[in-house]
Image 1 (tube, rainbow, N blue to C red):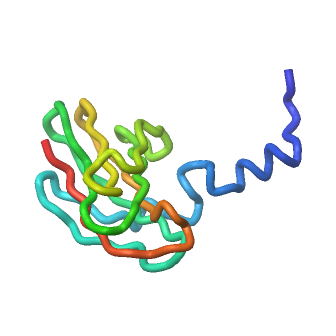
Image 2 (cartoon, helix red, strand yellow):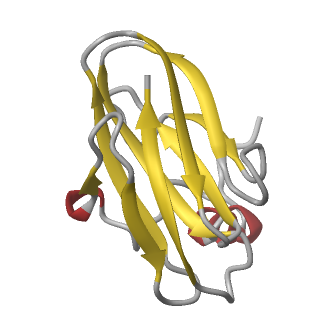
Length: 129
């Protein structure tokens, strides 16, 4: 049993592979309305867009992006921005992300980034029931 963090452990915790990223504060997240598409854009290389939405009625929900930008999406919750529920790259049409899941009531957090962290682009995101 190892109780001491190695240099490799510390590097991993500081890396982009950990979640949620420390440079993407959830307090500045954009609120999404269920059944309404929202325009968004990855405006700078490496940017991660943060969103929140509330599920008032439990059931099957689909979160998806549309557009020409190849995005990667991660869903957290309910009521816990560090509890990863799902992630997706290209399940939607073209290179769009899509997550379909049975969601209980609560607040959910969504992070979207460009698949190629050196690129930017516009997209739309929607939560539907």
